[in-house]
Image 1 (cartoon, one colour):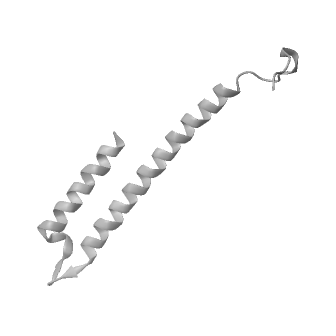
Image 2 (cartoon, rainbow, N blue to C red; image 1 turned 180 degrees about the vertical axis):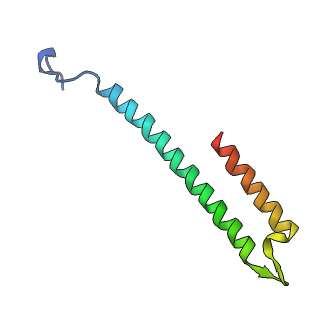
Length: 79
């Protein structure tokens, strides 16, 4: 709907919306990084606490290697 120039209240609406969108994306990414780090910490704690064959499951090479890979992935996401 066309409006006369004297009836328009603000012209920077797109700029404000873009600014808000960019900030919300940054906040969402930061939140997701926190979720990833917490999930990794919980997984590592479980691997320390869970005992199989009289050993913590984290002491097995296959489990330790997967945890190391997950740690590297989480740190790479922060970059």
